[in-house]
Image (tube, rainbow, N blue to C red; front, side, top):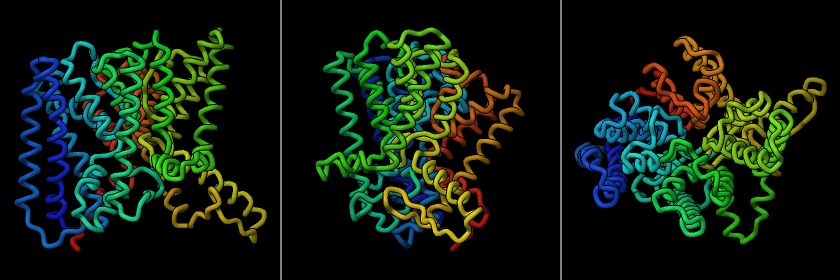
Length: 486
């Protein structure tokens, strides 16, 4: 473990983050004129000058990164980025306490959407734009952007890519990791531009509104510039429909879009087992929730279907947008949404959660174990989409499942020890570790996380990071053997 090379290359993503602070700075100074521009100048200078100093002044003997150095750099980037990114909230007075500002920023970068803001509409427009922009940055990942722009790392680029891209294994679209990272960002930006054009040109939303909705939808983030979330646009069916479609699209493995475009055929998408499971879960959950709303609340079919499809898509993709307070729904509907928070979207998407492909593999592995109990000589290779999964991949998924469960249980016990009731404690942990944002009970869609003690906010911030970087990347740094000098 060579900490100097980690610090050196940490300077590059910090510099990138400093450049990205230019968007809210320009918006504040030239467009909104809300007086918050100073709140962006200071962190921008810290990120640019600090990043430049690290890159130029820290001496290294090698240029490529080992696996452990890659894991350390990814985690350090997300933490340091959140430390710098929270400064606009503090300097503008939006969130005067550092813990609240850090929580809000980590929630943005990890695309969680959990908030401690009790009043959203009264904040400076540029601050809300930055809040939403952090989601879009974190959706595809600043490290992936770093790899795409700077092919200086050689084999180390693969280490970074594997550590940040969500899924059982980072999928290569091209021979070089740098080209894969560029392709993913091109797809991400392209879909974002299409969504923005639909909202602004067809939906006739103001540019500011369309921009913020885009920043919240494509990364499946959930932050918006209005307190009522997408419910503020409930009288615009086109907007809610487009957002629903793009939330579902953002929850699909972006590699599948690449294969569809390259082969000019949707067979790569429709034939993918994870995609079929993902859509199947959505349809089944939407039907069950619609039926429950009609039978228990007496909602008309059209209204129940509209709320159910939007909310199921929002929770399954871990976006966290709301059109209504679903915590007032019947128990079955709420239970379904809670389960969807755990399952999440597809691997290789901007969504969080356990991921559909892992659920599929775990179910098939469990079935194989049942068969082997009465037929131990049976040879049953575990296949997904015609491809035999290696035992190492299955073991890695089982290990992550164990870490997922232990993190949820540990977080639940800690939040309960702080005095939260059982449902609030459990929902807060599930909603943050799954990068969903709003949960149930005390952290429901009409409420926020501001009442939670600072220690609880820090733990939930840690769970957001663990969930976004898929456990191993972050938890590896907690092992003493990780830091042995080699």
